[in-house]
Length: 237
Image (cartoon, rainbow, N blue to C red; front, side, top):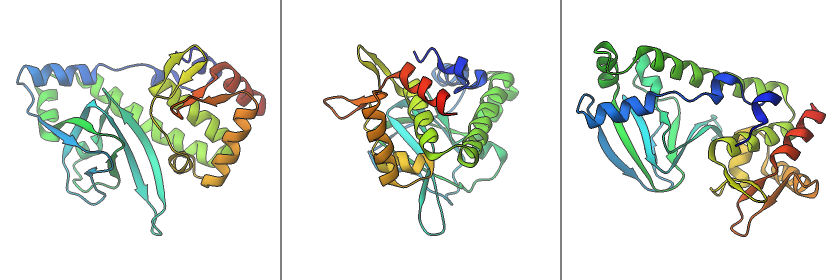
């Protein structure tokens, strides 16, 4: 899926690679080597809030979560969207309990909640491989660095196109007409992800549709014409 993105430079090699951290966590939980709780978070409810003294790491068993930060004026910026198999909340491993961002369930979600001390103990006992944990943390840091670079160096139209390709890579389902993002990502959320206004997102999406780069399914899901969109962005770069 999304076979051309790495060649085109849209996804750095390290981000395209999968790590076995979530598999090790699940195996360790099943063996009783790591303590965890299973929690259910309903759609639009918070997993944690900015300022919470939360020292947990989360593994998504089902559902979807977005991590957001808010400006002093209350403007929302989406840092990342996580789906089944993803691990998030790792910042508590640094020792600071207070969250700087909010994690919100985008649909009904089931999570494994793991105390950070259990993770560190598992690393000491080599239940969790330290190399896999380090690689996971480096990837998460790189994702945030690239996010900042894109905000500073790319046009809002290019950021939207790249974001759609990344969402297709992460969440997409192959269909005859293209790669469908099988979750309803509203225009307001897209604007929060790329740092522009909702009317501008609407304008760009309409342009992409007219150019045959995307289309909408009967369920109003965005379908990405991967090669067309990637080539358009490469020509515009």
